[in-house]
Image (cartoon, rainbow, N blue to C red; front, side):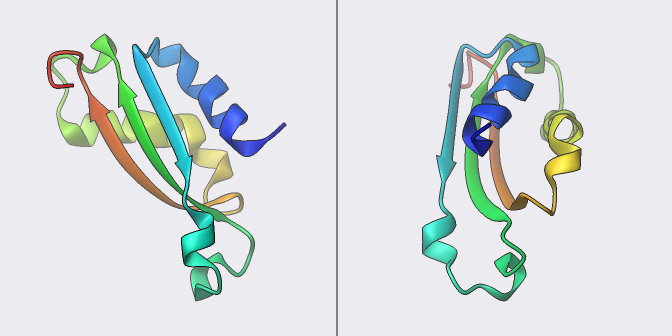
Length: 87
């Protein structure tokens, strides 16, 4: 399964109103930390599930869903986790 599709599938449990996964790996080609093949991704998730949660709690929830992909397939992950009102 393509990695972006896998990320989207795993985050579907958050019932996102909007989910954008951008592979930014090409901009980091040759980066020492990415030598193992792990990619760089930007992620924006908009979900009512985040209502009342701190930014840290939101990020932890996302990291827990993707934990086994880090650092082997995902080297770097930039996260924007928002409620619908914040979006």
